Image (cartoon, rainbow, N blue to C red; front, side):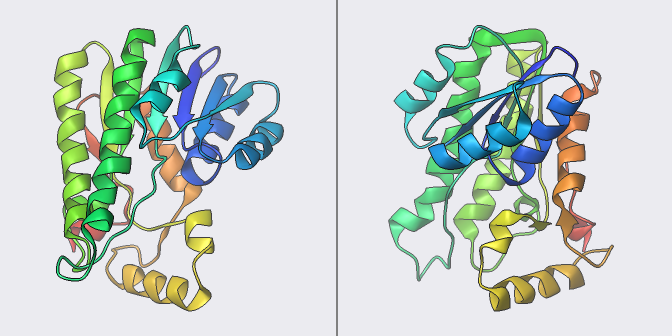
Length: 236
């Protein structure tokens, strides 16, 4: 990653922050995007002078365009940032059902669209989906469909944008700060259920998920692939 510029939309915490930290440690630079200026500032302070940030709302096309406008080049793009809800088809509102596509799918779609003019031919894009794409939950049909759509998007963009490489990471449950913000009983119940459904018997770590992302960025013979750092969840 030496002398590479990596854009991470959703880089102020969790997997995105860990990817950014490793890029900086390896001699690269990062531009972080997110909605919360305070959290972005904290992340940049922790990463040091090789990091900068801009506020972006991934549900707003004009905000995404404004985020990329001042950048002159991008070597790698990773887009884990999104905000959505899920629930049973017969119980949730239309607005909540549509939220994964508005934020997670279209947010990443338009991030790539605006990054393409800046991306080096030797560069890469890593989209964020999730293992529910192949093993849907009973309370998240639209969310599972969104993850599946992102995997298809990654394959299609790998063809369209070649020689730029495009891949997708589809993690299982990752023990990140996102989960840490849930009530303890909910967190423990979900972790226990997910652990029973994996081959390794536990949730993943942020470091394990970030390692998968960095592999997809740096392996120059990998494109159009979907990687599942999910502990075997998708196989059960």
